[in-house]
Length: 218
Image 1 (tube, rainbow, N blue to C red):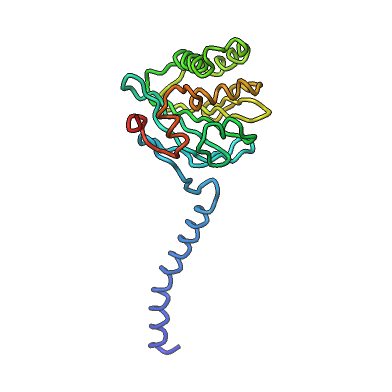
Image 2 (image 1 turned 90 degrees about the vertical axis):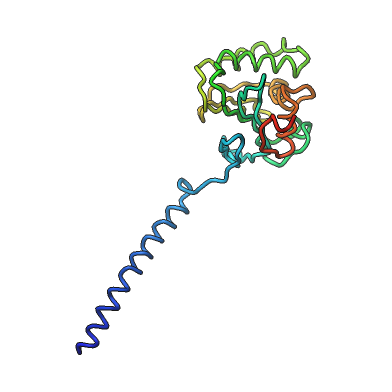
């Protein structure tokens, strides 16, 4: 090989190597990005907390329908979000559908203990059913048991409502209890979506696809 051609070959190799190296890195990054376990998930943001746009749980694909902060006495207690199989704008649609839906709870306040959460759920049931909770005595005992462990800021609960199967209670992605009974399943949904919900602004946000704090929806 002549000297000019040899030099040209060296120059070409010198410039080609970085291009090859960058291409290799790009392919590697692309491969990671396309991996389902590495893919950046779509999220919803409420009160600076990121929530998944889609939940894949117990063979159900549930999509964020709306949510807001549940507050009391100017204290942000938790974020309550509704996830549905299909987009819903009316509470009765959620209660009557034969497809799964769920209430997701993200704890915001350090003031929430497991006993306070248990009491809040029972009070919510009383309010939602016009104090007619006696038929649900056994189910309430199971529900209370699902919240037996200490609760800390950042904990997440999911109340998976499955028509025909009942209610599954999850804490931080772990199943705590399964509770049978269609009437009870619907009564739990009514805590947030009934005619007399725990907070009207939260119900509105759940059904209108809102992603705001409850204080802005009063």
